Image 1 (cartoon, one colour):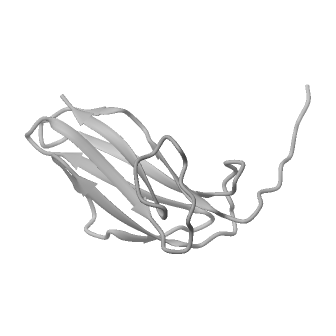
Image 2: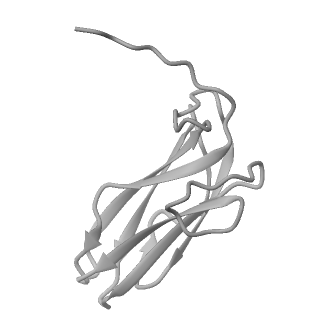
Length: 119
């Protein structure tokens, strides 16, 4: 067995990871979304502490009321709850400190987005 230890570089972007791709449009279903401060190689920078601003668009709402979250140890997390409507949900996390974006995410130069759907 071989183990590889990689040291993260300087944080340069936010990477969003949703626990699932679809929510049931029942006003109850919840999705946990993690926002990682990552270096250019995609490694989470554990000593990064950026404030991340979250925006939820579409038939869902951010739980907990806070849309500015401190990324402790390079990670911030939110929960998004479905409404009773179907449609596309776009969750965007942004931090003014960085200007690079993970290519598969939609967003401006300082943000990343995660798409979900309600069924």
